[in-house]
Length: 92
Image 1 (cartoon, rainbow, N blue to C red):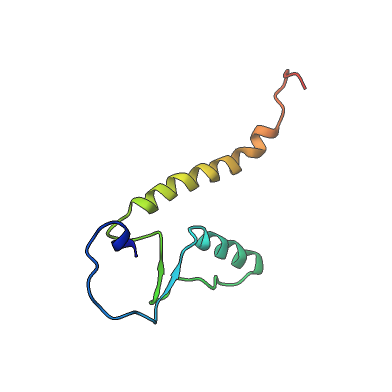
Image 2: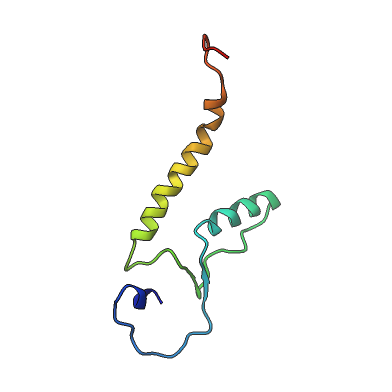
């Protein structure tokens, strides 16, 4: 679909039925957090026939854009407790 939607040539071939795709860009993060809370290995470890739909070697721009966007979200969440502390001498 990606090739077709971007106007690139779609090579002829057979349908692939033995591959899985993870579309959610936060899937790896959520799987890791869940595994950490449950004290076990993540169920979504990279496997041979599993691809991340937003990460591709021939088109890294979506992954880079998401990394930039996600780093802003992480920075806001990490600094939220610091922003909530009232400053000395500030009016309540």
